[in-house]
Length: 165
Image (cartoon, rainbow, N blue to C red; front, side, top):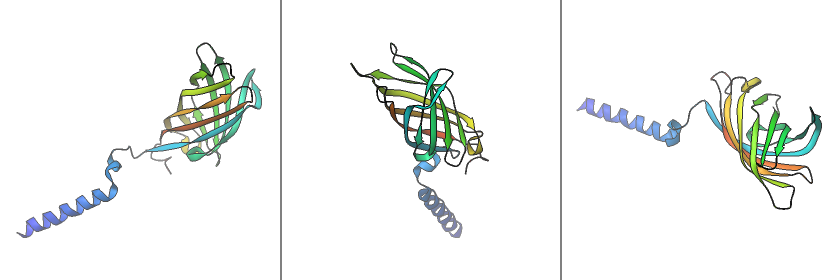
């Protein structure tokens, strides 16, 4: 009878421990984190790179800092903008972002471009992002007549055990 009581008590402790961790504790990869925030930039933020216009502005949220973007191509017929990001967090870490394509549509008779599909891939960087990988998506708009752009990003970044802090 004692061994049954001891077993039941131990099982109850394990169940209570698991319940205190929550049901999502085991559904997520422990080396990955959800990220999100906003980017507000101005076209022409730091001139041109190889004849391509740039943007420059602050990033908020989990990757708070500054973002510069080189606009490599604007294909109005396929409504895709090809860009290269330059992202630095507020503590000086950099994120290596692969060349990306922002797809969407120009509003009729307007220079306003609505971004509906913008996949951003992280492949390393410096500091805590040295061996990080990640996928983010963004939506937003670019007004080519005023030079204003606003985006909302969200996604997941995965770190090696050493870089995660």
